Image (cartoon, rainbow, N blue to C red):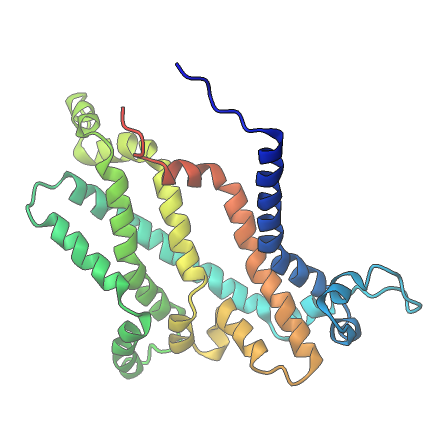
Length: 292
């Protein structure tokens, strides 16, 4: 058996150097935005370059310091960004719940189906997901206006589920396909019904795949701009359209600080979710890569 290849100290230094440089480049925009969100307007606009903008507020000024939370207060309280955050939470929870429920049932059924055209059904569903969202949303606008449903969160949830469901179905079908059918048959031999075998045996085995698919579905709904902009009224806006409204009204410095604080508020929950579910994500993405 050959010994594992050992890297020389020079190679390690170069590799870690490139890795560190990549990490700095990837993390810098968020760090700079986070830092700037706590700065006063004068410091944010008066610096001549990004280095001074980032590090120029380390010293305490005569007025008692240059850090403030006015941007967050203005965005969350004055501009009611909390309402957009609540709307986003409602939309994402509903979209993920419906998509995963239908996706797990449909993916399991198609993975165990002997129907000769099951694959073509999945392929057609994936082609539907590949279509630009704007071309799909335009078909919903007229009936929503006629039925007085435009502007409500429920219509946005319906459309986002319809757009994201093919992706969820395809991804979960791939996970189910890698689970041997012997597990189903063994459970049913022991007295379980098909649904009991699905619920108590199959779902626990592929739980990392469900978590991974749910996270992707959440991100698609969380970051959506086209659907939420076209179907939601100003009062029911989610966070991304609300952020764009800040950027579109940057006539005063205050609005810019609101936008910077809103960017941090939108990005931070995603970091927390990815860190919290990182083990499940890795397990889900590698599921089926090694077969015993």
